[in-house]
Structure formats: C-alpha cells, structure tokens
Amino acid sequence: MQRRIDKSGTLHPTIFPIIVDSISIGFNITDIYVFSPNSSTITLVYITNTIDGATNEEKILDFYATTTLGQVTFNIDDFESTTRYQVRRGGSPKNNTTSDSSGYITFNNSIWSEQHFEVYRYRNHKEYYFEVG
Image 1: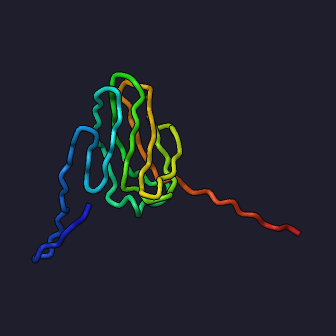
Image 2 (image 1 turned 90 degrees about the horizontal axis):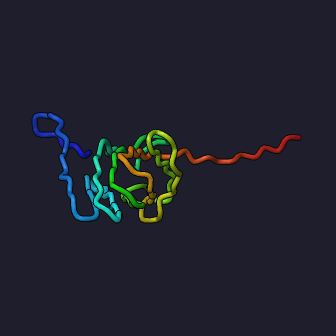
Image 3 (image 1 turned 90 degrees about the vertical axis):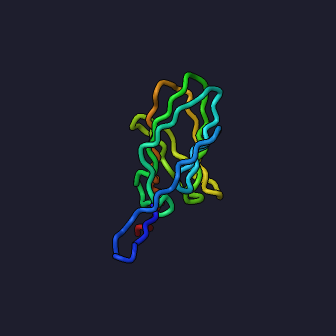
C-alpha cells in the first residue's frame, strides 16, 4: 500500500480499487487470473504491500477459493521475477514454484470444497562446500 502525507503531516494510505472481470481479480498492481471449467469464488484475505521486497518465509498472499469441480489454474502476477515461492493449501505445503521472468507464478488445484491458499516467499537454499584437510 502506498501512503501520502498531507500538509499537516498526517499519514494517509492510498486506497486502490479492486477490479473484477471475467477471468481475474486485480488489487493494487497484482492480478489473480483464474482459469476454471466452472464459476469460482475467490475471497481475498491478505496481500502484502511489498511483494518484491518480501523477506524469506514472509506471507505474501492469503485467499480462499471455491468451485464445484474440475481443475482450476491460478496465475498470479506482480511477484519478484525468478524467485522461489511456496504455495500452501489448508496450511500445508502444496508445492514450490519459481516465478517466471515476468513475475508470474502458476499453480493448479483439483480438490474442491472451499480451499484456503497462502503464498510465502520460499527460502532459497544454497549449498556450501568446505574442504577439510
């Protein structure tokens, strides 16, 4: 969320509209594209205001989704490019994904009732080799 300070020094958040169309929901500059054989309902719980500045293991996005059946593909933009993220369903890791060069992450779900999804910045593990001798 961007903020502005008025002449008296009072801090005000800048509120962006939520834009909903037939295939996406947009908030700030982040769009959630939903491709589903049936109508789907998305309930946004939380979105961080600094996706590209998120620290390791920081929650970035939290939402609920529901549909009747079929595989649903979520394609979400505005992520830091070529960065690893973890998608959790119902609090458990569902999969790890790396955003593409344009900052999109994509994941699917085919188990339905209402599902709770969270996206976290995933710690990038580096391997270190030490020569002992």
